Length: 231
Length: 231
Image (tube, rainbow over the protein chains, first blue to last red):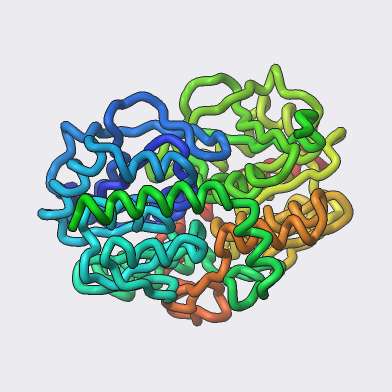
């Protein structure tokens, strides 16, 4: 067995993230051969996600090596906070310059954009937040996974699985990625078939926007502020 | 706001589990109104999943209240070990008697079966392990999510999301579950379309079985032993 890691993947975590953005990706990446998967945060203290699942980081920002893949998950108000967090933005900018692929899932793309890393790139985000990318000079895409040069972004929460399998195909080849897709039995069957705004219809879309109104508003403000900083 | 929890969901965790079995479910359950989601293990020490993601339990087996939903994830050799772990089996039997729903994702169903909780029930499991359920007197189903009376089981790894949304519909009503499906943007698009044995074809199926050969064999042995215990 070859113990030399060919790929180093850094998953950034932070308080109040949506854990499935990153755990979906992690489960895929952890099956990749010769790959080291880092869970990155400012300290090694436990990180509590939105919903209460608590994950342990294994590498601090200060000790992060050069990455092949930099990946940022989305979340709730913690994401808004991170869009204005100098330490986080500096970390993303530093590793965004050198990583082979600069990537995000869900509203994690707003954090990349706030760090100035999506200017001129097509990108995806959670459907209720995606127009905010435009404020920060990214081009909004409605694809589930968007690959634009070395920027790779996925849509909302559950898109982390599609996203990570796409990256696995790019890093390890399609044969290996197919093996992983079958191992993970990724043969989804959404019970209600309403997982996109188009499928859900106007009434359900509005209901979700109502539930998330204060978060969407706070995120919009943070996006506007970030836009004035990066321009 | 009503602070009284209407539902208490207990997600059992253990070393070497596939974390996405449980994190996919957790992300769904954590969005349910008036619901407490427990992460249950023997102690409060961090639990390291297969692939290295480390999760903190929040409730010990000894302090677990009566559950509305008992849920068990699958995993690698840790699962085989748990199929013979007296403390785990006793815990599952105790709460399996009183929980409103007794559930599992992936090879977690083998653990339920080993505890004698699937005798005479239809159940799902990861496709490469599902025949083993028969040894323990469950009826194998190839559905992604199987509801048979109060036993609810999901297929491999990624099925945890479909599974949890199905349960959310049963506990909170279809309107709430639809809201959650759209919030989570569960609009999957598997990049390779090979997530089931039928879709993947014989060659890829054999390749996955080869990679998992020692695990499948160890699990088969544990299932045979469990069968002789529960009969």
